[in-house]
Length: 306
Length: 300
Ligand SMILES: Nc1nc2c(ncn2[C@@H]2O[C@H](COP(=O)(O)OP(=O)(O)OP(=O)(O)O)[C@@H](O)[C@H]2O)c(=O)[nH]1
Ligand SMILES: Nc1nc2c(ncn2[C@@H]2O[C@H](COP(=O)(O)OP(=O)(O)OP(=O)(O)O)[C@@H](O)[C@H]2O)c(=O)[nH]1
Ligand SMILES: [Mg+2]
Ligand SMILES: [Mg+2]
Image 1 (cartoon, protein in one colour):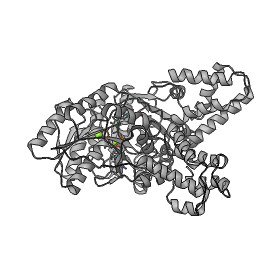
Image 2 (cartoon, protein in one colour):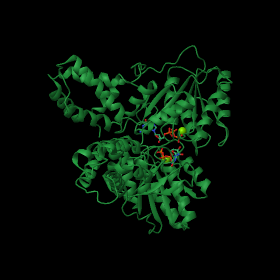
Image 3 (tube, rainbow over the protein chains, first blue to last red):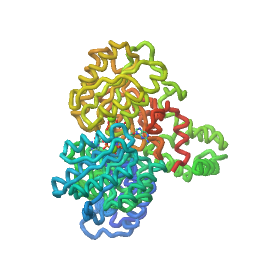
Image 4 (cartoon, chains in turn blue, red):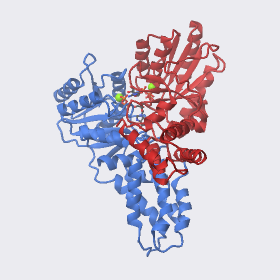
């Protein structure tokens, strides 16, 4: 569907070729293509605009003293800027609590339950932790069953209370159970909710207040479009979450939501989900994500052609 | 409402009495459309159409402009929605009428099936559900809960069994029960997974052994908050299963679902339903004008 950015930039870069210095005129066409590529990748409209302005300021007046052509310089500037935007210090998961409590949050269907399982599995197999999953989604049909099936698949105990419709109470009981039984990590799965659903946002705020998690994670589908900023901001306003999980990256989405979310809430993207199976979890690499958003599988070859 | 008013008044000021739309207007129109996930390509197409109209009709009033704008955007949406919110009709000459529901992970397939079954049942139709998502944890139990809620029969096998076999059983059972509608749930799958897409093709083929030319409707469910990737989803699912209609879910949030405009235009697939919540009643028959209007109002 979408031409990738390298092709587009190649075209735009014809304008730049032969100039020794990046100027207002020769940079305009290139930036238009960069902006378009970002929008095609679902980067938020306003953020794409800001981003290209930043790149422009950095680019203007730069002499091309080295062997780099102006086009090469532009590509490098764009990629570096994107990588920096999505990067920063990633501290990993805070496991300092006894037990460490991890609260999952996010929209409906974003991948919270699946990721809860993946994280439990990861902490158990890679970090030698004893993890407990707690089923606090009392709304979605068969949500509790789903977490039990997941728990069985990975050999992790699941705490649930089918008669109870109060997620605050269930989460507290789950943590008490963990303390009494020597678990050192507790992962709380919650129901999906929309940011505009006041009652449901209050509910998760109450869970958060009651259990004081070491780590609150916002789980977001990497296919999300322009709305990513609204949702991320609303959840962050309520939960001041610690990190972002980007799921379903095994698809072919460009995943521009990653930049949008990072720009709006400035929280690290801690893990990515790359499949439905329990081992499909990876840490986040800003540089790879930048390539993906720009549709540049191979930046080096682009630079060589520029 | 504030955004809507300010957008149209801005648009009005800049266009009324002129024979050309100026850049400022086009910029704000672009912002509204792109921010609703309409996408750059489709946005450019809409802007071209509006420019052409303004050029031809000249000296427009605000009212006319408002109308033209909505018409031109809606014009890209395939011409098949009835606009009647209670219209859940199905062709009478196909019995059972078979709907296969497909889409990527977590978009709302199973929920939409529950809501649809409820609507059909309310009309007095005999509905059978088929639990052909045999992969995802507790997917069968989830559909079972919906079947119980609506009080319709469900055909299911064990988790991990062959989805084509479940679909086969469901159709056989529906035929013997003389059912009016069959809805087949399928596992969520990303459209770039060739094996999983082939599996869908197979499910479809196996169903045809029971009732020829089924499924009558292949309903692709798109998550309203999905961005431009929905295009590729529509393309690949169409390739594998010849999608015949679309449902857009989760429009009760702040996402606008604008990407379906370009999809409906490019693949000529109508949007039939929208999902506006998690409850059994939270399904609506798609209404073009209301949908387009939602881009210009601000829920956030
Ligand atoms: N391909 C792929 N599918 C995923 C990934 N993560 C989750 N899924 C699938 O996405 C769908 C939704 O995942 P869930 O874990 O149920 O999402 P949730 O956020 O718990 O959903 P709700 O509880 O309904 O809000 C399921 O079909 C999962 O198998 C991923 O990284 N890749
Ligand atoms: N707010 C809202 N939530 C919805 C809507 N439709 C579905 N959901 C929720 O989205 C989540 C996923 O819905 P499912 O019906 O399980 O989605 P699915 O496509 O069957 O998912 P998989 O089978 O895992 O691929 C659930 O929490 C649903 O309650 C809707 O229109 N609005
Ligand atoms: Mg869940
Ligand atoms: Mg399902």
